[in-house]
Length: 437
Picture (tube, rainbow, N blue to C red):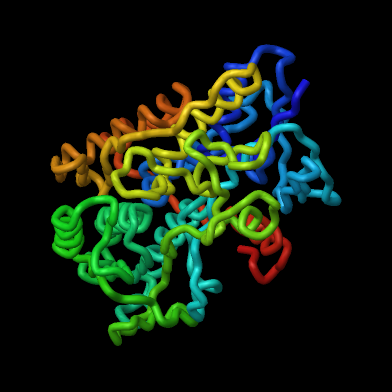
């Protein structure tokens, strides 16, 4: 029985394993998936998790619940040695070990791209994982509680100032959703005023949302600024030491919350620790059918693969690293692996975009497909409708819908659980007479 190893449990990896379980006959192959997290993150929901519109667990798809015929290994692949058909795994606990395989599927994804900006590593939060989205929400809610007991001044203003760096889909959606939460939240604090909110979106390019055309992008900027936010285009962060933001346009201010969403970078395991061929930016080179050229029994898909875009008119174009492609590549990869195991032929990946849709806070969104642009409430409904259909499993669809419907009548839950980051503090403090009532 051949051994199939899937490296990474994100979109592409999860769907590859999930669909292979359904396509492979019993005893035809042995499946193993290695990932440090026990779940697949449905990343399009992260902005709404950060805004409290979706429960964090509902954006996490349990691997063990859905992958019932796959052996799951909780660990990080640190090296891929295809010449020996082994990978080295660093588990959550214990010494590192090797796993052998016959066929490898590399779907390790990408990592957040960081720049050597002073202070960013110490103070910024990313928006690529569930934990980060929850931390952003809790940090904002806690800041409001702290600001409400302070007199107007620099300390209070810092707590009510938020900076997002990066104007791609993740940055813009996260920024707009968190801004929407803040404006709704301030109504619950009579001590605070909406005019005290300072929300900054910083983008190095001259426009935001590169997936849409210029005119809709400009509308999004106007929409955010009319709501009270400030969008800095053609601007970079020069420093964030101690939360003091210095921008390349000369502006300086203190920010209590800094969120870094400035794109993706190559996964270091794929870029530096494999003998599989990679391109100049560290992605695994694959042909249109997702096979690694010139290498037997090696496949790759998702953000860590340079997949030719057959739907593009531009010679040499590659698919955009997003969920829409990773999901479909994972499904096709499962079909291709199953077909080749039985002596069949692999099919090429070709997907024509269904358009781009983004949420801009409760009741506002934007959608574009070719020359068709839809703005406002209808686009927001389209965003929610598309993603509730796209999230895996009926169980998750029902849970997400239930939270959305509850919010229609009762609004968002605005309780911060930041204390869970330090669960022993209350226990330790309770044993000190100085802290007893």
